Image (cartoon, rainbow, N blue to C red):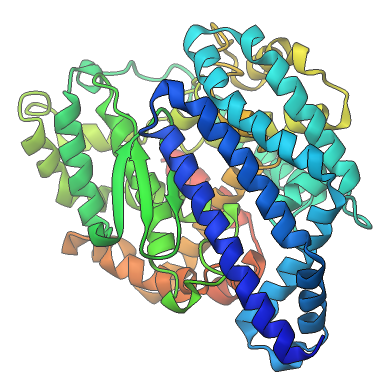
Length: 496
């Protein structure tokens, strides 16, 4: 195949791939937000059909030939397309290594598993979800065999899907550092924490929470003409290009703090999507570079910005205006101290900055055992509780607050969890570099995060996924991943 023919066919096929991605995006959004309960099974079935179409597009012989031709003529490609072809070549190899019938059956399985998972979590019934999770884990184990490539095998295969170039060796070293430096500090500062004040659990009606969360979203300069916010069981962000970015939140009327930090977190994700270079729309190089890099943005805004004194010096009065009765007698300092308190708790999404990485380390260690077969799915609740007690000194009272608390395994996302801790560490490294260019806390006195957004757009967001995440991190900070910035940040903050 000649170069020009290959390039033209690649772009034609890419449009079809993007159309399929868009259909998946819409179905997934609908299932988690607006779909009627009785419609979900049909949505799942159609999603499985689309997965077959995706498989056929990527494994098409002519498309494979086109990619090979482009790969052999990299000197004729711009940097974005060159990277895209490299990633697509890997994607083709992986897709063609998975039996088509297995791929389709698996996509149907995870679509069916989600509503069962929600029911199991709601009813504290792990046995209800067990048969689905066993099949999902079995598929993931087989995937590590199908996709093994050179030194990348076993759990590393799954890790690489979510964070390219990171392996168990690097994660083991990372978590060993966290365990060494943070566990003693956690035992020191989280022992006998002050009781949760009454004001933190007082009734704040959903509509008031929504309005304040919309205010925070505007403070962060989320472009409402290119995005929306709705509700879901588990807050998430989903996007398709820079002009269709969607976030959700969940509201507990006796926990307004949860909604506040969920919206800041998800808007951090959304800004990454909205601030990608617009030239990447219509390519396969838009969106975040990886899950770890994406998480670095959400954790950056949630923690470095959203828990800072400087942020609430400007915005606390607006919280009081939205809830004048509830927060009339609560001082700004009391509020900031509360949102920065540390205490060992059961739920990952409600964990403070200091204990959060231990929640991830627990899941990482469990996933390694599930994938290598040394832990069986039926033994998960027991093993989870044992390890949780070992790390945190408390035992989950039920599976809803234990092994069933996260949706990730229902989607088959094994290898995803470590990116959360990685993202937090990358956020600290980016913050360190940003501070060299301007005083971050001083910039927040403007009332918005505009200056922070501009720096992240220039150093991270604009690249989308047109470069590998480790390359973007080097460009932004001048060095490779360095978790010591994260450790230093946490030790300094929680040793005060």
